Image (cartoon, rainbow, N blue to C red; front, side, top):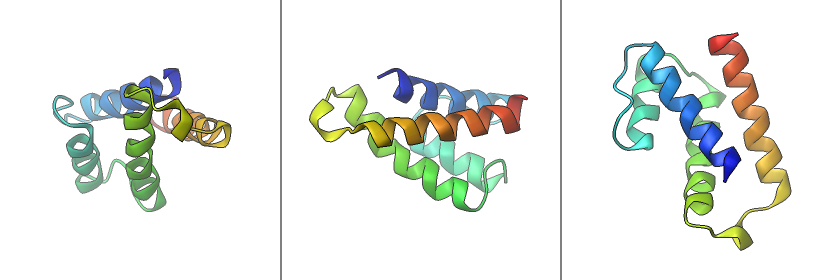
Length: 86
């Protein structure tokens, strides 16, 4: 759950920092980050794939989440934070 919250918070903070409306659906925030070039290339697909992880965590579908996925999300979030806020 905490990894999913960190992912969502980071995406929304990136949007705010870049003058993008951070309210509403996270998928729409990601689309805006993509269209403005804040996230690019492989980051786009990776971030979109983690929307499913976030939804599974928020709905407490623990049997659908495995440790490597959590580690991957945390690594991705760390990379975004270092690039955007470091």
